Length: 151
Image 1 (cartoon, helix red, strand yellow):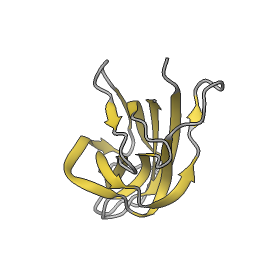
Image 2 (image 1 turned 90 degrees about the vertical axis):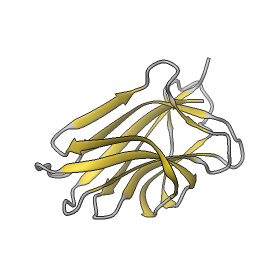
Image 3 (image 1 turned 90 degrees about the horizontal axis):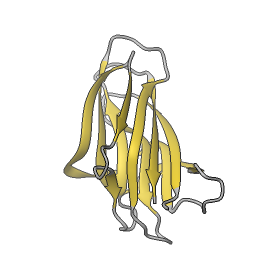
Image 4 (image 1 turned 180 degrees about the horizontal axis):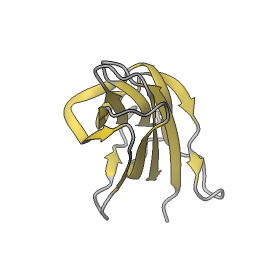
């Protein structure tokens, strides 16, 4: 049976894309991870703004505050996936590798759950992974992403 984990990250919207949560393969123990679910929500003052949220492949983690993934089963080992939030230097995004894009009103919450066999895969390649980023032309509210995966 696979071990399962969650991690969350926050960020403030700006006019250029900013990353709230990055998940990457760890240098020391390269294993694939399978993201089966994530939730996007506004945690600031909501308004009638539509924000473009993107889950996209990354090849470098950028600079972020470390997040310790939470084990769903406390008996499992620590996650081999590295999580970071509130990026001050953006990850290196792979061009044209958007896994999912959703335009979301900041008054709404969005939950994505993979159909069986359609999980988003983080490859067992050093610091490759998935970043969750968003942008808006003028809104500066805070937003949050929570992701769940198995290894």
